[in-house]
Amino acid sequence: MKRSLFLLVFAVLLVVAPLLFIHHSDFGGTDDQAEKTIQVIAPHYKPWAQTIFEPPGGEVETLLFSVQAAVGAGIIGYIIGVYKGRANQRDEAK
Image (cartoon, helix red, strand yellow):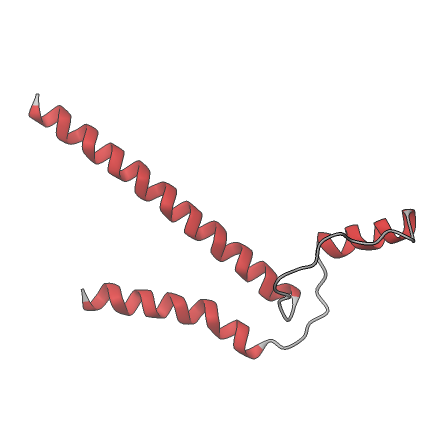
């Protein structure tokens, strides 16, 4: 129990630490490129939605996306493991 709690706290620190130290960066992703292209094609276009949270830099945005992907993969892996375990228990019971 102590080890898993330590690993969980360590993982959270790995995710949060970059958010504390990065204040501004010039890294641009595809969202920025799309916005610039739209401004070239239709300069009078006004966005109809606003962002809820603007990360301090592109690296932080990439980090958050990677964490989201890792959590999703963990959940899917857990579900597959549960169903595989149930199937093995059914096979042993027969």
